[in-house]
Length: 472
Image (tube, rainbow, N blue to C red):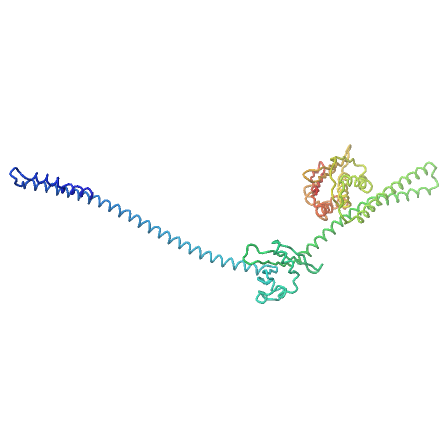
């Protein structure tokens, strides 16, 4: 607008424009027409005033707009200042909270270290003590003030950790565990592990006194061993007692039969019949004596082969040998002999050998056959055919063995406790107890061969034992 007004004034005051205006205000005689001058001046003044008013109006609009923008900028700045102030206040609050949490965490960690029921010793790269908890103080009678900063072996000369072991941990950056014990007196687990992502290199030594735990575990192991061996001895005693009772009964019958021969009124035919009966009784006694001898031989073989190293053996060979052995040693009071039971074999071909303790697995299978013989012996049904089915196969990198019989099945309670030591059934009969106690078999499969054994049964159908032996 200013440039426009200046342009008008420049045009009016140019020489040609000035001459035209002066001529316009003169009449023919050369007199000035003041009325024209006044009208022109008034119009020009009005025009100028209008231009000035318009200019002021737009200037005022621009000023208002500028003031509004300045106000918005000021409000925005104030908002930013408030936000920044609030952010700083929140940051200060969080910083204070973090500081409180850090102090609490430090105190909490320190309390954990002090309350640990094992010795915790920190050692730097120069083998100087950096941590010494309360349990270490109590076991060494050395306060942490006197231990910190000292060489570990000067502060605690009797420690069983060597500098070479600590250097090994630092070099390999891997933890190691050391077992230190005096058999039957004390046991210690010593763990040395390196500090990770720390400015200062060092290790932490944890010394755990596990004497009570080891003694308790050994006691449990011994109890389990005694219970399983007691079960084995009871089973063998039962296997011996059954034919022995038959032998005693036969001998008594022989004595009574021979006593009849002293009678004078016997004819030759009757005497011959009595002698034949006595011979039958003696033959039966001899057969039962062979059974008892077989049981003793089996026990002696097991004792001679107990322990030692595992041998790669075909499980099918162990099963066949156990079947032959069971035929010579298993006899039920009901008169059922194992050799009278039909054996169905379903063995997969080309099975790999399995590293095992042969004598132990033989006793496991013998126990399962004893259980089957006892369960089958309880069935008195016309036309019943006692049967044991054996399945042997490989699946998913393991050998699977199934021993299935069609005798009296197990109840749900019996299935739950059959592998527990000293299992007793409701009847409380010794021969029934022996037939249903299989903790020894479970111990051999689970502990000595790292396998699994389970049972499925139905009281009206029979029982199946499932054994899984993982192949190496």
